[in-house]
Length: 257
Image (tube, rainbow, N blue to C red):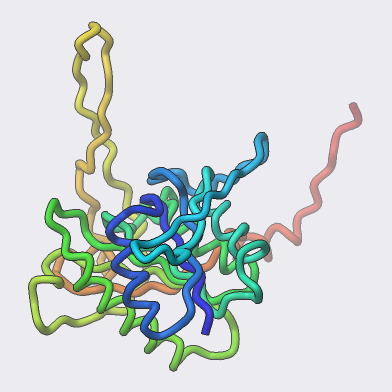
């Protein structure tokens, strides 16, 4: 099995290294990741300049992979078409330092990397661990590896895109439970802290307040708050099918200009 591994925290991030070590126990791993942190870049790609990859070696002078001066999506595309001798069996993105749940999925470079893999018909999964100063990435990586193995055993023939989130509390327990739930879509994080910097300029610093409102049914946000791991199948086709079916009945005219 061939795994393409990437992230948005950069190729030297501890979450990627921990997951790389776990995945190398079950498969051949190609690491293609950003040279610097790309958190929050979403699904941006680089068009206006060339991408320059740099080989990265481990302590034993063995090739780990490539650091790319681009976005997570750039890394996956380069990985698939330039650095993998054949199409990878799965694209894994993470482990991200910080949750990618709820509407944060739309901003996340970690999730965007997994989406890029899914674009090309490859089963892909984004893995994220709730941010903590002393995050236990090695424990989280063991959980990710086990869940990835189980997904590959159970999934059907069609490629699927998954989003996995692990709360901090889970890495401090021996026994945990995973919930398969939809992503939350409540708005949150609309507040800013206003201040003045040392040069007298006014700034606004985004916060996560107010917290998301309850949606009346379980989501990744509600279950993570209870201490559960969450797994959500995603799709990147953003067409609203029900509205499309109704609009196909419309007759719209275009004015002469």
